[in-house]
Amino acid sequence: MTKSNSFFHNLVKRFKLSSSKDYVYFKDIVFTCCLFGVLNWNSESQEEELEAIAAQEQKIFSFQTLVSATKNFHPDNKLGQGGYGPVFKGKLDDGREIAVKKLSQTSTQGKKEFTTEAKLLARVQHRNVVNLLGFCGYPEKLLVYEYVVHESLDKLLFSSGNRKALDWKRRYNIIVGVARGLLYLHEDSHDRIIHRDIKASNILLDDKWIPKIADFGMARLYPEDQTHINTRVAGTNGYMAPEYVMHGNLSVKVDVYSFGVMVLELVSGQKNSAFNLDPECENLLDWAYKLYKKGKSLEILESKLYSSSDLDEVSACIKIGLLCTQSDPGQRPTMRRVVVMLTKKSGVLDEPSRPGIPGTRYRRSRRPGTSGGSSSHSSTTTTTTTTTITTSTAPTTASGPSGSVPRRRSSSSGISSRSDPHGKRPMMETYD
Image (cartoon, rainbow, N blue to C red; front, side, top):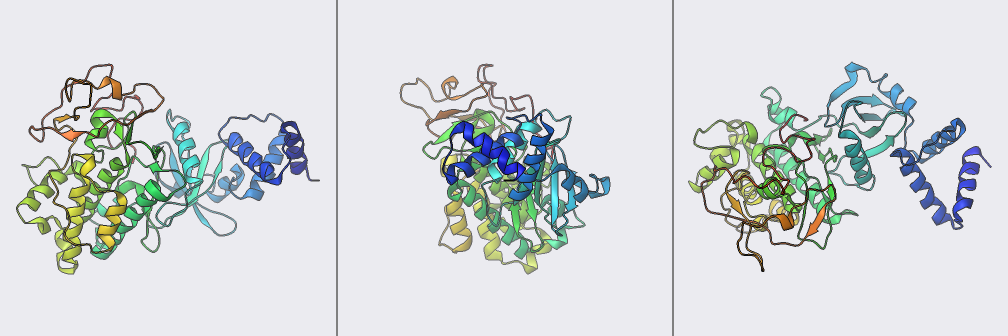
């Protein structure tokens, strides 16, 4: 019996596990506990045995393996700076190219994001979701991904020098691919997952220009029997749905909204949060809706793409983008419906209403037993670290000017439209 088998055999005897199925399951628990620091192994021999088993599992990488692959995390191999630390390119001895995400030693929020991303992606397998190859938990926390050649979408879409690589066909395929990836996360994966941070910088493009959703550090599991959950707000300015920013209401429709913003960015080549083409419009969504209502929606399309684009596809994407960003989350389509609209060339699409923009005057619909639709929020908002499950009615849009500022909520609500209530992640793009 090898040292590693002997180590686990003695451990299993303590818990009286007899079947091989229980043994394998128990090993997985031990690996996970070691990875996330739940168990601490002080014995040098035990650490060596764990390293040997990790190598056999091929999902846990030794630290030395990743040091060698990245040439000791050499600056020349740095691909970028993620939400909680740098990302390095590496090459394993078997020839595979990898991307190694490293937890910054100074990060105050990265440890939780590391754990979240590792747990969720360990069970996710889809063509349009980045593939997590493995982990390293000691002496540093590292996530190991497949290397994606063209890196992130924003580096191509919002850079005048690189934008020519994204012709309309590629843009349309990116839209369809991301839609399919979100459909998988929302409905077809083992656990229903809300990404919470869909944006161009979190979409990677491989050598065949296939889009892959990445960066699951803020993702949340979503109970299938609930209408929405109330949670603290964290995200990126310009991509967050109004009901989430203002009330903390989190549902799959939050991802749908972010997807809609990204669709309009892909069509126009304009960044929503940095839009300045029309002084009468606050952002890209306002501008797209204004042109759509005037029957001039094709003017949204980036001018260089006009002659070579399928204008029917462009028109459909603009309408889908507007439908996905409607103020009332109940009026936004599901990702399954979006995929059908994109791929089945279904008939006439619904008529979109004005996009919902964080900061618009907003109220909740009246619930039984309350005296007003917008005066009572404390029962459906949580300020604790534990997510509260609720089945309250989805919010609807109130009348008022599009850019008006919402009333400041009482301090008991814990939700601010200006910053993340965690005090950890400001709602601005400082961590792309």
